[in-house]
Amino acid sequence: MGVVKLVLRDGRVSINEDTFDVSELVLAKDSCWITVNNLSVYVMKTDEGVSVDIYPLGAEDGESLGSTWVLYSEAETDEDQEL
Picture 1 (cartoon, rainbow, N blue to C red):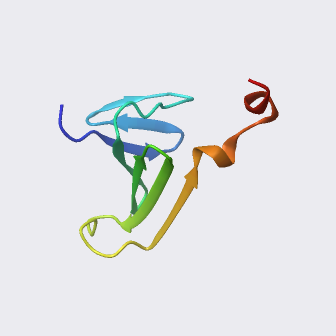
Picture 2: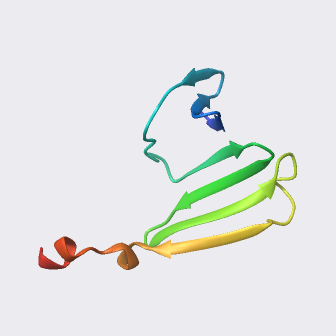
């Protein structure tokens, strides 16, 4: 399928050229790009967690404006620990 482009605008999601009302999106592949107004957000899942990089729209090959990451282990709940 190649690159999937998600655009978030006014509570609706456009996936490639189709627009949907959705309450939840699940990342099934290793990464995706999401356009939010004038920002491009790159979400990548790894074996240990998730990283997010944010770029100006149209400048995705340049330096990111900001980045963050979270380990899956940091999101453990009391229920996870009981298993």
